[in-house]
Length: 105
Image (cartoon, rainbow, N blue to C red):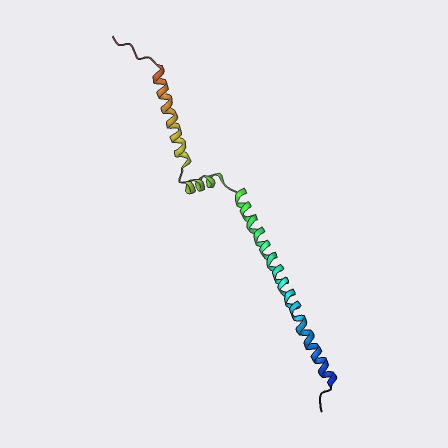
């Protein structure tokens, strides 16, 4: 029994329709994937920003000093000691310049 021409035409039209709509279908799939990826990336950005802000707000002064010391190689206590030594040295020089030598017989 031969296949009726109407059935062949229906299958042919359906195949053409499927092939014709394939581009739009895959374009819509790619758009949906792109939007999903953008949402996921935005969520990652928000989480990392929140974690960074939390670290900044919860910084301990002792930890901040130690981080500054490690990153710059500069110990705050030794810097203050050097500044005080320079200040004292300048004051001693000024003090000795203002006094008159003792009278010797």
